[in-house]
Image 1 (cartoon, rainbow, N blue to C red):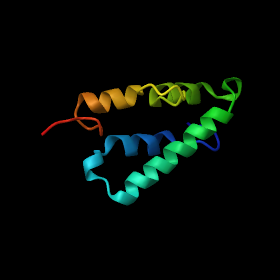
Image 2 (image 1 turned 90 degrees about the horizontal axis):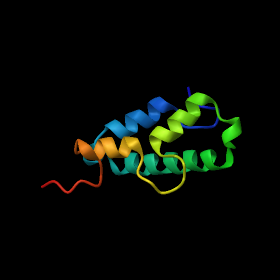
Image 3 (image 1 turned 90 degrees about the vertical axis):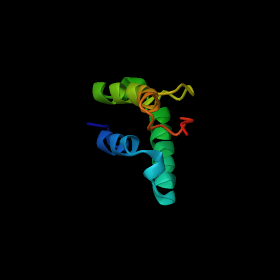
Image 4 (image 1 turned 60 degrees about the vertical axis):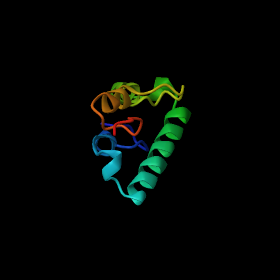
Length: 88
């Protein structure tokens, strides 16, 4: 369960599992806004105040704000669901 004020893990998973090619423009914008808001919330919430599940969720989603690819993004790219694949 995510901490109060943070994007739920099920919402994150749902957005991540749907291929970018199948998302509408509105969904892309919504994902971007939600991700940005959650990243900001992650930044202002001290690590010492995060629950264990939130810390784990931040690690998996790459919400550590150091511009590294998240484990979830790596998995999506590995199976061809990420936006960074160059398949023809």
